[in-house]
Image (cartoon, rainbow over all chains, first blue to last red; front, side, top):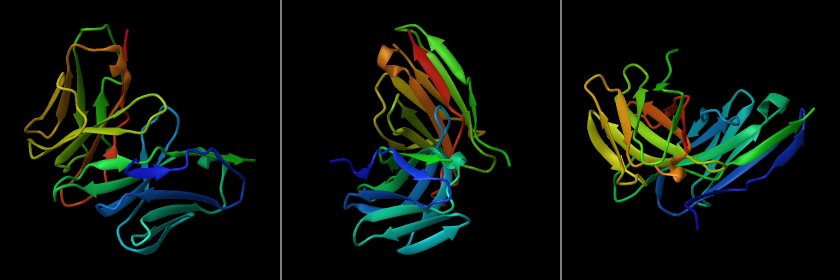
Length: 114
Length: 112
């Protein structure tokens, strides 16, 4: 079982709809959670970070974290065709009280149809 | 705003050759991370450096080595290249007291 898991998709939503992306992680001491957007052949671009339970909103994006259930989600409101990309969930998993490396889920491919 | 700089952007090497990838972090960032992303895969952590010292080590082959220099730039040295080393190599940086990592544009390595 992977330490961070996402549904690979593709997730297809119509333009203007809400896209909901989900991610689960294993029960280690995970402290920091991130969502990256990656267009094909390009580098991951940080779009949201969340550190405590609850919701965090930034423009059209809302990240949600539930540590008890070990999941983190990303909502994209008013989805645009330009949002079509792979969304990577990344978790800073602390192992043996050390480490600041990111462990990524497999990514969810989002397709927003005009 | 200044971003992470990586060079070269594209590199073609033959099997058993060596390659050196360079990374220049965002100004005032003291920590550098290297990731490898194979086709259709998510990025895999290789190694990181803080203040010129190795801080974490992931799935980096023994054929690879890396270091961080006094100006905080980092180099990833890859020897005895194999076909399976063909991938995108990303460098990311941050300040040690923060957790958000910012990725460079990557180096696409092709081994033939």
